[in-house]
Length: 164
Length: 193
Figure (cartoon, each protein chain N blue to C red):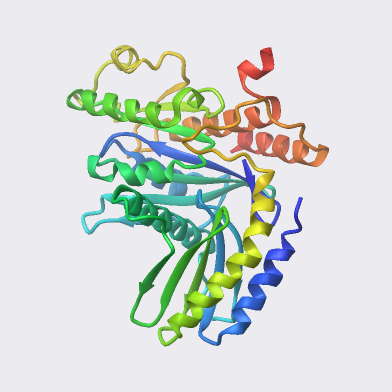
């Protein structure tokens, strides 16, 4: 199992490389936020919610392109009054960069391409141990043998649900 | 089941059903009125009339190691592509039925769509719980008729009134429990093999 801190170190390197970048979120294609880094801000951000939206928007745009038979999706760019959001495919996930409005778009695109090279294999390895449930079918075998800790965590959650 | 970078187990639950059946109301009740689970922020992507445009989302933490990411879908016909995206990676479905007599065909169409998307995984590796919602409306169809017409007899069924919260917590508890049981002990099929 890959050490999740590897994501932090790669994302931290990216966020430091361009002054206008405020936040980076790495999500999978089901809406799950996997990792995120931020520059200091007084504004608290709901990372889970933003990650879910970023994943959904990217996947919806990709679906549009597929329906229109215009090829694969490279990048989604959203421009706001005081900021921008970029989302691009990164292996089995989606890399989302939130930036200031004045950021150099060309530089961001370049950074995202380089990040893709560095992150996609780590991400694919991280996600490899997790069942992939898509319309193409899912592995419906019995669950893998859980470690003792995993089993304890799931059983503890079951007990909490009884009390809830 | 997936894990996030903090090592927490993340289970995706989706509330599915026809337009205006009460999916958002159900999630909203669960989020705002029911204690017992620690909740993250409630995210809604809605149009100016309050109709769900893409999805609603709220993470709910059962323990420090287990989180349920709960989504609703947009029920209108024109949002079918969005529904297909939201349902990716789902671990459990709460199908919300509109008990109103004039919504029977919409319920059937929605359930057929869901079955098309998930195939034989629905109700086996992806547990399915039914919420027969709007049981308080005057023209509510009898429970037996809904079960027969929608072919729901193999699934756990709860009668709900999402506007007042009746049955909501039990339906959600049932689904969350089924999801965890599958993770721990497998499906009925795999247990027998």
